Amino acid sequence: MTTPEISEDLRYPVGKFDRATIGPEKRSEFIQTIADLPRNIAAAVDGLTEAQLDTPYRPGGWAVRQTVHHVADSHLNSFCRFKLALTEDTPTIRPYEEALWADLADSKLPVEVSLSLIDGLHQRWVTLLDAMSDTEFQRQFDHPESGKWTLDAALAMYAWHSRHHTAHITRLREREGW
Image (cartoon, rainbow, N blue to C red; front, side, top):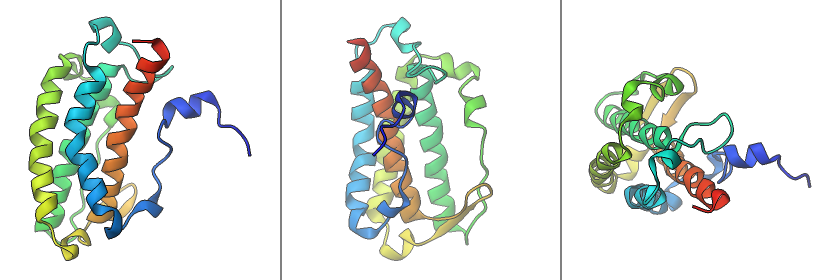
């Protein structure tokens, strides 16, 4: 067995997303991960200085601040995609250039702005997820770059995304002794 390179570990601290994790038997776990993200990401950045917030989580990666704002952007897009898939027949969703979004002026704001957004958004998202039927979790949207996604698959992906970016921050803190 080969050991992954350090840069690979830093890029994927919880491993890459595995589509094999998708399915109704894990759904409640994934919903709980979505519910826990606001508290977990807030704890991950709690007490960090401005300089620490502006430190990249890995060489060539986003700063902690950009990462928190990215999570808000990404999860807001995902919530909208869920609502589109629940109300339209396999809608084609619009992708966005997340790396370019991370360089826009709002990515320099205090992290508290996005922490508040994530908190309210996740309250709404979990309410929606808890009310969905098995049939609704099989509804789909079409992503022009990655194809059709069931809402079960999207839920699994965003549970992974929640853990992935929180771990970027917590692992940086561990490495730096913050």
